[in-house]
Length: 465
Image 1 (spheres, rainbow, N blue to C red):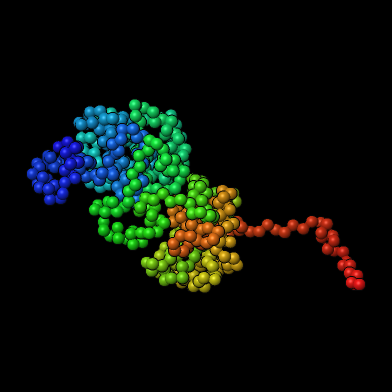
Image 2 (image 1 turned 30 degrees about the vertical axis):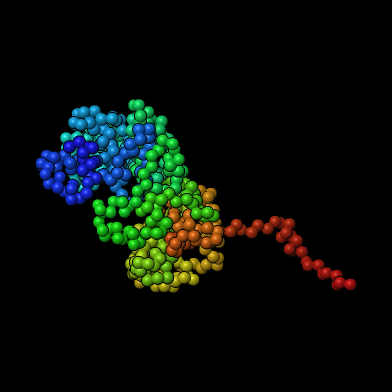
């Protein structure tokens, strides 16, 4: 059975397809097992237009992006027999990190029937040999794929390729630099191409690719792959995130614009997310924003728990987001665990909205914790503005990927919070950075001349006539 026949078989009604499958031999069924055109949905097959250069698959979590990318590589590298030549022979495989390249794209360490990486989608005779020390996959027909990561763009300086699979490009820290280096080397063969599989984020490179004349775009939702996902997973994520800004991005694959008038922009967040070496920290604080609900209510706000510090270099570092929806005992232990894990100096919470309750919860978990209430004398927006200015001045770093916190930042405007729910994580982060004295007012400087005049005896004013 050739690929066209497999594709036709997949399109038949269930009863007709079942009848045909019942008449196939074991060898035919085994061949069908590895025929991607039988199993794939139409939006998982590469564009038929021969002119495309970039296939941009913007899809939600669980859509099947990894499987699609791996099958695209297999289809283009392998011929009809293990030793037959495919369309491409020198590939670049680029992931966010080296670990993602190994574990997600290659599927290293997973059994044949587990995962959807390159080692899992090939029949045994076609399967490439993986050499981790060389960051390389070699197929029986001589084709080679080299692994790269987007934290080291210079890895791509020099090597040449005729095709590339780029996974989770929207999360790449050095997205533009890595993409540029890839383009300089993507010049072998008559028609070099790139397959890009990613959950969207509104970064500049994604916007560029969406507008590029030679880009073919597929937009996919998590629910498109519902038949292959556990019902419990779908129910949980749809119940929690359907209709929210995060859900629109992570489930529906919408590229969301910055909120008009937002104090934080995506460009500021991207700058803060660039990798840094964290220096010695003068202070480390765990900041809690109590939600005012029981904490474990599904429809309530989260308890914002943010860990951060101030380095000896004067920069601020957001170290962890431990926000959660748990009972008081649950989130209290989570905060105390973060306090000990990061060797924090103090846990803080706002007095006006549950500070005494927070202290009681923390003391119940661990009496030895250093705790302090902070007092709000200004509204949320006024407190947030100077913190946003610090990001604009590139004085704050995010030591990790804090998607929900960053989304809340981009939803805070000068008129208030424009997104659904409460900015619980953002409030905790603002309190934290404010507490670390990043926004302390400059001391009042009085000149010697003013001091001299102040020391002179006061003159009597003449009475009014």
